[in-house]
Length: 135
Image 1 (cartoon, rainbow, N blue to C red):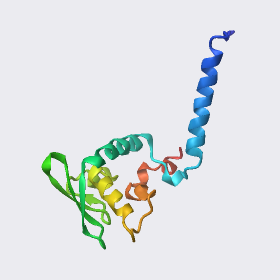
Image 2 (tube, rainbow, N blue to C red):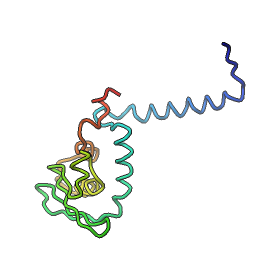
Image 3 (spheres, one colour):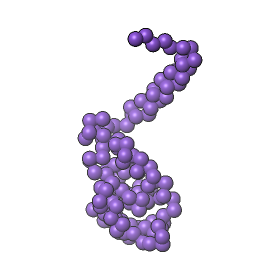
Image 4 (cartoon, rainbow, N blue to C red):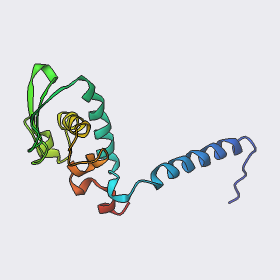
């Protein structure tokens, strides 16, 4: 079987090659322990979009307990040390729900926070990290 590449396809192949190179450069500098599997990454991206609409109040700075007000005029209690939220999504999914993401943003902005800005992954179960799956 012989495949002929026409000159019309070469610009498209070059564009694909450049795009793949950009993706590789982007992920090359992130350690494997800080990369989420695609499903969890997409879910976290969606949940981070909701964070701006939520109001967060610190209830206990030592235990990292926050009150989050937002969705349908409901209050949610987020405990970052225990990895729980009263909506139960954080408890079940084992990665931060939108309320927990809002609470971590509030925590990261405060002095004396025991976590770094890129430690949102610390709140995810290891089964959602790519190094566990060998990707």
